Amino acid sequence: MAASDTTDTFSDRFQTAVAREPFAGRRVVVALSGGLDSTLLLHAFRRANVAAPLVAMHVDHGLHADSADWSAHCAELADSLGVALTTRKLELEPQPGQSVEAVAREARYRVFAESLGPGDVLVTAHHADDQLETVLLRMLRGTGVRGLTAIHALGRLGDGWLARPLLPFTRAELEAEARRRGLRWLEDPTNVDTRFDRNFLRADVLPALRERWPKAGVMASRLALQMTEAETVLDEIAAADLGAAESLDRIPLALLTSLSDSRLNNALRHAVRGAGLPVPSRAQLAELRQALAAREDASVLVSWPGAEARIFRQTLYLGLPRAEAPPPAGRIDADSTYSFAEGELRLVVAEDYGIPDRWARDGLEVGFRQGGERFRPEGSAQHKTLKKWCQERGIVPWMRGLLPLLFHDDELIAVADLCLASDVP
Image (tube, rainbow, N blue to C red; front, side, top):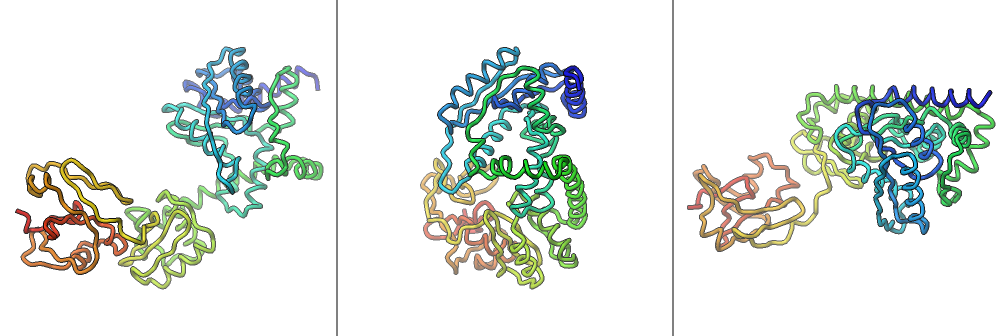
């Protein structure tokens, strides 16, 4: 194939890829590392027929001695193409046991997300080989359907979009095009360190895999697309199963107990993600299913890192882990606040009713339920225990000990912002 044919093939395929994404009229931000892939991506966008403002962004993680030189290289490259470049320098300090790659990736995308305005599109240089590596890594780490969706061609990021127009290309195709154009790029020395799983796959596994199965990358991309479609179907089924729930963090057991184990697992994963919590493992899901089958109110607690599930009054509650012990007692007045894990308590001026101004100026004691507290709730003709009041109000048992109580001269006068005592003048 002649060089001109190669040029036309790459340019045409790239133009087709960008034509499918929502670039026109939007600001396009190229994530520029200075490596081969992102260098070619910036050049390709500079030459493509895309009616959109083009800028670049480089993130210096501060993890390598030469990172300042890499930033300077990116600035020189962007300047040569007449593209404005923003550089953000980070000072990351991964802790022992943490994945350096994961820490850097999370920080990098956080910076990207914060930089995007409404409708902006961040483009990264992920390609077909990256897709193959990601599918294999996630499979080996025991992922499910969602994990095998791998790298998406288009998704949301912050207030904007994240697009990957090079996914149809292999690394070999990108390198051939970069060399044909005479481009100059950086080589990250950590890319050859096979202590990192991705580098091990890239150096020691994928060459043999491609030799035996030349279309492995294409098949991985096809699998990822099929898993994306499967995930969409599973989400639609879960949404239908849970449609009668007012909130995904509070689900009536009646919606769950008639489902098969597989369908219940799917509904629970959907609910946990919808509640903004980390998804439990398969073993933890099995434990939660057993708890749902037992239907034991209040005593059920199934927890996993970053989340917990409880059952009360035939409802499944999903939330963040709660402290076992109540916060320490404190004091509050009109000019101060009381802060604790569940939030912040402050006294504000009310027009109709509330505690006397002089009490607010002098200050009130803040405490938490110890047992045996009694008061006469507003509108009630007689005193009752705090426990009885909580039961009547439907306050879940695990939150009752975390409700801040206000005392004046050792008398309970208010339960957080939920109730005043009738004895308040």
